Amino acid sequence: MKFDFNSIQSKKTIDSDPKLHVLAGNVKIGKSTILNDLSAKYNWLIVDTQKISGYNNLKGGKIIRVVGLEPPMSAQAIKTYKEDYRIYEDLMAAPVKDIKKIKEIKLKLENNKYWETYERKKDLREDEYYIKDLLDFYNQVDENNKLINVCPYDGIIIDLLDAVDTPNDWLEYSAARKWCSNNPTFILDKNRISILDLPGISGSRGWADLRTELVNLLGEIIRVFKKIIVVVHFKTTLIAEQDKINENKALQSLALRGKSADLLLSECDSFGFMYADGKKRIISYTAKKASTDSRALHLHDKEILISEMDNDNKLTTYWDKIYLSYAANDAKKD
Image (cartoon, rainbow, N blue to C red; front, top):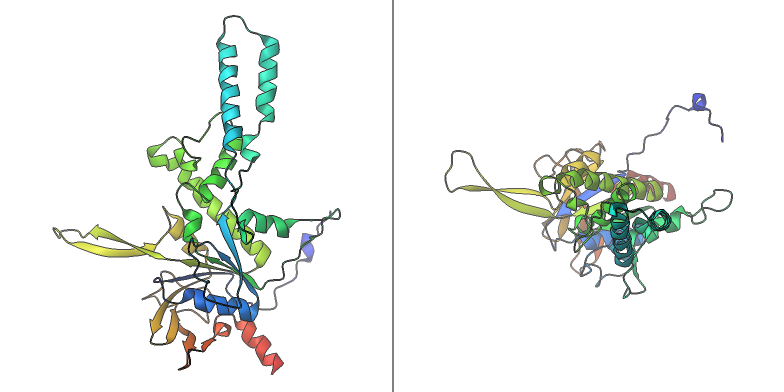
């Protein structure tokens, strides 16, 4: 395939819709309610990672349940590799080398690519999947390298992103799999498989792999779905203030580990903090409530009324204030 990079055209239009939108807020504030309405009204796919779904009492949304980023490596494949590698080490340490046996066991080790194995949960329901299933579906191509399943959605909602960064799961499995493919003799599993088992202070070598995995995951999802909303919670930690004995200061941060929160905020187009005002819900993009500025100028330092309920508890949402393309399309229809 030939490319002519001299024919790149100047960009003539402005797309103000956020590509990566981070939505935060306290629990039970109504995030799932307004996101369900976005899914129903504008055809967004909701990926529900919550152990107890926030969408059970809602209708209209297009929702799938996910139980992980991808299945972990097969424990049996790892066990077989470890046993064969122990035999290989014994053969190499023997005073008299059995060359034929050494070649046989070496070939067996080379063929046992345990990091490419998957151990899916056996008790998944019909509506439960791994994120890998979703991405694999939309990345399938035919013999002409054309996509078989074109994504029909306007965007995707990950509710919650916190689950992706859960210890001993999700990103750790995926990052560990890539590490093992390059270092097959260094088996990461003890009672689990984790990139944070790498040697170093508190698994310090593995944190960089986790952050890389998070960026790659979000990038791949945006490539397929074009727009993404990730829902996160806050965690509160107490820090001792300097020169003040026995006094602590409450510090709120996103409920992600290590530097993943800073990384997410550096990558996102917009960060909104949702709060309640009676029956109204506001998403604040102001410096006072949001953790970072929004690149989208129509959101920068603004407070957006995102939803309200009337006396009959009928919900009205205003997503066209955030995704301006919807406002433009609605105007054309009128």
